[in-house]
Length: 100
Image 1 (cartoon, helix red, strand yellow):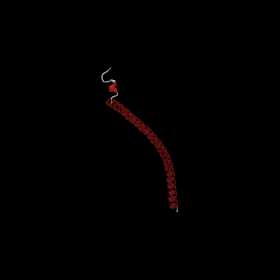
Image 2 (tube, rainbow, N blue to C red):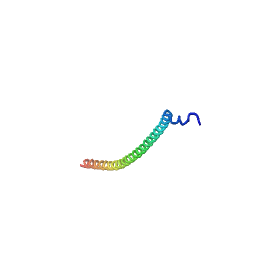
Image 3 (cartoon, helix red, strand yellow):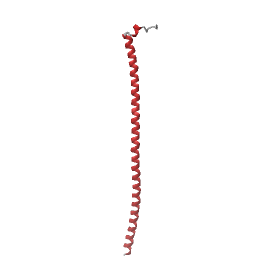
């Protein structure tokens, strides 16, 4: 028989306590590690969800911006036409005053 592993020693309260506490310690370490791993996974999942949400929001804002740019271009063309018409009418008014 090996030294220190007699049947009497195996069932001695100090051996059980030391063995159990060692086992519990490793079990708790494992549990803690898995908890950290799970929390990292949860954090990663939340980060991916947030990234997708931000990408969608960014896309919506981009589309709104494109619509505003298009509308702005239309309004600029319309303003240019109105300015040209205004200049033409003003020149006709000047000609009319000069003819009188």
